[in-house]
Amino acid sequence: MIIVMSQQAIEEEINRIIDKLTEYGLTPHLSRGTTRTIIGVIGDKKLIAELPMEAMPGVEKTIVVSESYKLVSRNFKQEDSIIEVDGVKIGGKNLSIMAGPCAVESLEQLLESARIVKAAGAQFLRGGAYKPRTSPYAFQGLERKGLEFLAKARAKTGLKIVTEVVDVESVPIVSEYADMLQIGARNMQNFQLLKTIGKTKKPVLLKRGLAATINEWLNAAEYIMSEGNYNVVLCERGIRTFEDYTRNTLDLSAVAAVKNISHLPVIVDPSHGTGKWRLVRPMSRAAVATGADGLMIEVHPDPSKALSDGKQSLTPENFSLVMQEIAAIAALGGKVLS
Ligand code: PEP
Ligand code: MN
Image (cartoon, rainbow, N blue to C red; front, side, top):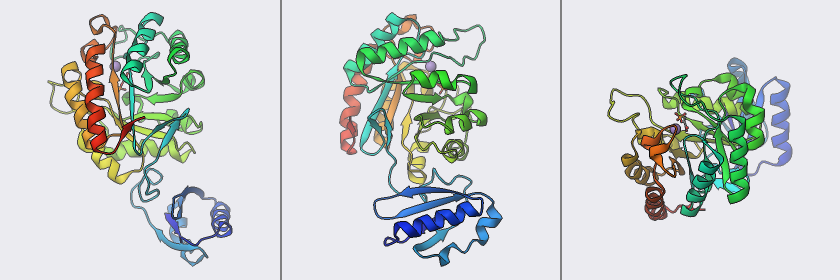
C-alpha cells in the first residue's frame, strides 16, 4: 500500500503513521517529494488491507498497489530519482557515461583506457576485475589486482569506478575499491546478492537479466531497495530473442517503458546489447534519443588485442565520435553531460 499524505500534513502526523505501521510489524519507506510525502508500506498483505490509515490525520488517500514491486514505482515517487555516486549525479537532467574495457587486463591497459575515456568526456570508468565468462577456460579477470588497478586509475583521472561484483563473498572487497557496484545480467536474480547489496548504501548498477521481463527486472531492483538501499540505477543490456545476428536484442522500448513506470534512472549498454562495434554508435544515439539517462560502452585502446569482448569494443576514435554525437542529441532532450 502507498499512503499519500496531504500537502498540509505536519511532521508529527507523519511520525504518528510511521510509529503505527512499525507497531503492526510493517515496514514503512518514506519518500519526501517537493510537494508531498508518500509512505510505502511493506509487509503482510492481509493486515495492510485492513489498516484504517485513511482515518488518520494528515492522510489524503491510500493506494493499493497491485504490482509486486512498490518502492521502484512512480506511484511511490513521482519525481525522477537522482543517484549520487561520490558527487557525480545520475538521473534527472544528467547524461552519465560509463566507459572502459570489458576486463581489466593490466595496469597499462587500464590507465590508457581511463585516459581515453576521460578525454572524450566520460564520468565513469568501467572494467571487470571479476569476469563471469561463458567458458570456464576463458580469461576470468585479475580479481583483487584488477580492483587495485581500478583504484589507481581513479586516483590518476578522478573518474568514478563501476565494476562488477559476482558473489556475496566479494561484496566487501569490491565495495572497498569501487564507487558503484555492478550486478551483471547473469546475477540479476541472485536474490542473496541483491539482499546483501541492499544492506549497504553503495550505489548499484543493476543490469537486466539475459531473459528477464521488465517486471522481473523491477522486482530485482525492489529486492535491493526493500533492504534500505535506494541508490539503484537500471541498465538495459539486451535480451535473448530468436535473432542471432546480434549477440542480444537491445530493447529500447524497455527504457521508455521503465521511465514511465519507475522513477529510477535507466542507462543503456549498446556494447553487450548488440555484440558488434559497428552497431554501438547508432544504438548509442538511439538510446539517448529514447531518454536514457546514460550509456555504458566498452572501449579498448586496441580492441583487436582485447582479452574479452573485443568485437564489441570501440576504438578511442570511434568512442570520441559517439561522445560528440550523443552530446548534441542529449541537448535536444534537455540533458547535459555533467
Ligand atoms: C559487463 O558489463 O562486463 C558484463 C559482463 O555485462 P552483462 O552482465 O550485461 O553481460
Ligand atoms: Mn563485456
